[in-house]
Length: 185
Image 1: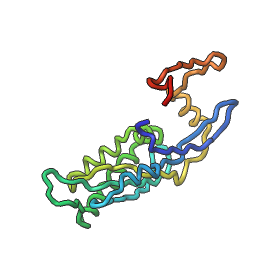
Image 2: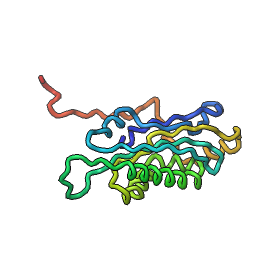
Image 3: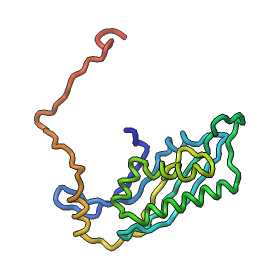
Image 4: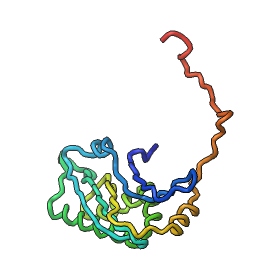
């Protein structure tokens, strides 16, 4: 629920009985999350990176960051100069390229979920100008390697994300009484 603002798109590669084998096809932030980040009196910095993972996926990543008020700042605005924005953008591109080119798609998606890339961006770009709310805003899969069923099965057999079996005949339903709900409102 904490990461409910991420929309992850999956692509159904193969169907085997009642199982659908999927691969990562993209990620996006929800509109309400983006709108909650954008405010007045700060600079918005965006960067776009095209990279190739170690397993042959071509990705386009869009990053977004915002400037932050410095400690003991009296001025009401915290805009960054154009030269600093360009330097931050360059650092973001280098950092993202370095992270993506050293990993395969599965480990990269595992890093998108807990925001470890965002924290690294804030730390590395914070030396130039203090920034906050750095996110990978969007990920597009531009080109996939040729479909390989064996590799797809390896990815899905290694996964430890197996849901619990649901008992359909005797579902466990707990009745809870909300205080003040027993009488007239």
